Image 1 (cartoon, one colour):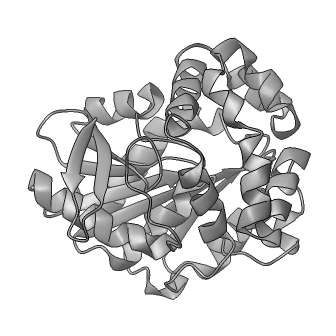
Image 2 (image 1 turned 90 degrees about the vertical axis):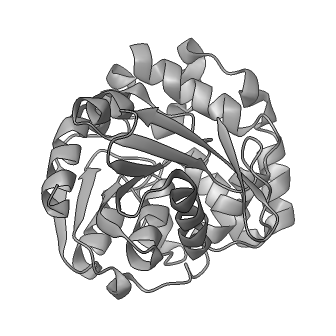
Length: 286
């Protein structure tokens, strides 16, 4: 991974994957995650001539913690990374907990031409946002609602996941994986998801904790600030980010093109990556 010294003194880590020297796609990892990249995204991106920048959010895998951060804070971090690699324009995507961060870049990072929210969350609505989640996510966000100390105690129990293997992934996330996701969790996707999770915990749980707290408080920008076109992808079988989140985003993000797919889950939807990128490129006019 690469590193950049940010203006406020923090260090931000990121990966550069895909096609060297191509137009830039910034992709925001899920919660937890660390920006190593997924071949199921990087491969189709490289085929389309795209260079993929995967920022590792503060507190994850060597990126300096930014305690109390809001979702919108990612926008300036990304601007500084883009300046460092000499990119003036870009397209952006984010999956799961990365979806809101992609929308923040669409709203606040200069040069963004189009955005993709993939199985992403909508702004928090209290306990309404828990409806349809698997029990592990309900427990996690309930802890977050009760405060940082309660959440830290809850997440501390997950530190052993830094040794998780691909073969044990489905068992470790049993309440969150419908059958369609279990079928998808094989090969490179299982390996990359597991490596991303292990990497996210390699320096502790601060990134995960701060992500959760940022998701349940005001994001720091309004969705109607998103002036670029947005493609939205979500499955009705999703048990991590319930489909009601996607429907809410579809009703509130200006210029959104929603794809709400029957019987797709939180992971199985990655088989549509090529379609996502094709639409993102079309919306960007590239």
